[in-house]
Length: 386
Ligand code: ADE
Image 1 (cartoon, rainbow, N blue to C red):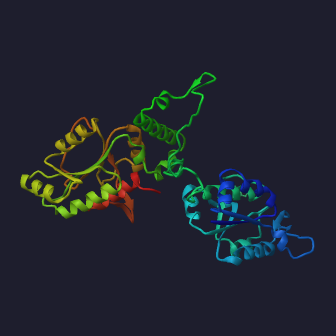
Image 2 (cartoon, protein in one colour; image 1 turned 90 degrees about the vertical axis):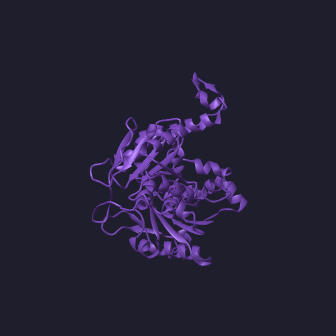
C-alpha cells in the first residue's frame, strides 16, 4: 500500500514512519509512506500556501498549492484522497477496513482554520474526523489513519490472530492484559490466567469483553457478533406451519442458521411418520423432535445448562432485539431462538424466556411469514459481522 501525505510539516511524520511496527512495514516494503509539501507547489517566490479567510479573517490553506500537490501524488496512478477534518465522518473500524483496500491513499493535512472548500469539492473523496474535538492540524489524524489502516495489511502486524482478537475487530472491547511479575505492588494477576486451563482462560476473556462492552460502550453491541463471546451453544427451534414441510426447505433453513454459528435446527413435528421422513431427508444439521418439551430437554442435556430462550413472535409489544442481545450476552446460558409458525406451542415452564418484538421495516412492523427469512434477519442482528 502507498500513502502520500500532503503536509506543510513533513518533519512531524518523519519519526512515525521510521519507528515501531510502521517503521518495520516501511523497511520491509509492505508499506510506502511519502510526504509532499504544498509549499513546493506554491505559486509565489515565498512559498505562500495560506491566506485570510473571506468573512472570518482566520487563515485558510489556498486551493491551488494543495491541488498541485495532489496532482503530483497522482502522477503514478489513481488514488483515494482523504481530508482529515472535524467535520468529516467519524473514523471507526469499518471505515479503517474499507480504506485498507485502497492501493494508494493521499491524505491532505489542513492547518489553521482548514482548507479552501473549493479544493475539498474538487479533489477530496472522503472527509474523516478522528473525534469530536479540534486539533491544530491534520498531521496527527493522518498518522492515526495510517496506523489503523496499516494494521489491516497482511504482514504488518506480526501475529495476525492478534489483530483479529483486537478491540473493535469483532465489535467488542478487548480484555485486560497482564505480564510479569505476577504480583506487582500488592496487585495480583487474575488467578485464571496463571492456571494454564485454556478453556477457563477463554471463558474468562469472553466474560471480561462482554462486561466491559456492556458497561462502557453498550452502543457498540448493536453492531457486534456476540457469537464468540457466548460460553454455550446457540440453537433454533422451528415449529413449521405445516407438518408436511419439505425436507429441502428445512435443510435450507438449517444451512442459514449454521452460517450464523447455530449448532442445530430442531424441528417440532408431532406426526411420527412425517418426523421420521424429515429426519431421513433433511440432513444432520436438523433434528426432528416430537414436542417442544423434547426439543428443550435435548438442548439442556447437551449443554448441561438451562437455556435462555428468545421467542420470535412477530407481534407488537415484545422486547427490542438490542436489549435481548445484551441480556443473551449477560446470561452465560445456551441461547435458543424459537420460531413457532403455528403460534400454538407452549415453551416448557421454568425456561428463562423473552419475547422478541417484530422486525421493523418498510411501512411499519414487518412480520415475515417465512421462518427462514425471519431467522436470517434476527440471527444477523446477533451474529452478523458489521
Ligand atoms: N483536524 C482538526 N481536528 C480534527 C479532527 N478532530 N479529526 C480529524 N482532523 C482534524
